[in-house]
Length: 209
Image (cartoon, rainbow, N blue to C red; front, side):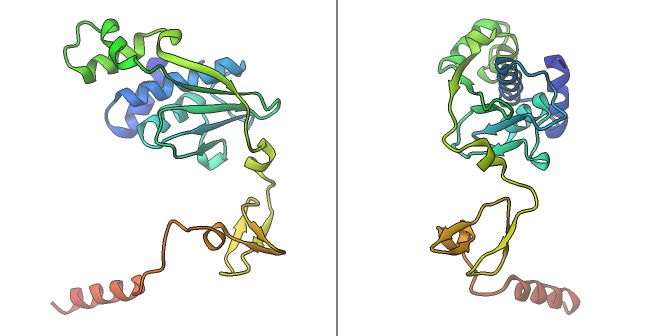
């Protein structure tokens, strides 16, 4: 297992600095895999990690575990929380790991030389033992691993917009497969003016100042 300092160097290289959330991400990644008895970093798809926010924290988890979205071993459930669930895909055993509620206060005890809260957390989170820093709870997934991971190569076209849907993410409405954007409230709405029109206008202005 790679040591924490090496992981933090790799994580900070992605951001050009190291922050407390990266430390928490790396510590949570190490603790989650250890609770499942899985060695790190992973080079296979046995470990599935679901992070509950993006940003620096997620990078810390990814660096520690070797899981990433490109290999579909890292997923985001955007709860806006510093926490992650670790799933052994083979056994479907799962644990959720998250910071104890008073870690900001306790961090100062582990970094008394740091006078600013930020740096006390940055250093303290690296020094605190797991049982002082984290909660590790056994959990049960409400969606099966098979449904989350899905089957490779499955494709279907949305009956409304016609766009292709992969990874069995269609929603069946009656007997019609719909993409989630058509079946539910989409995160986007079509603009009244096509972006292509704006791009053409900008190019025209550039050519004829």
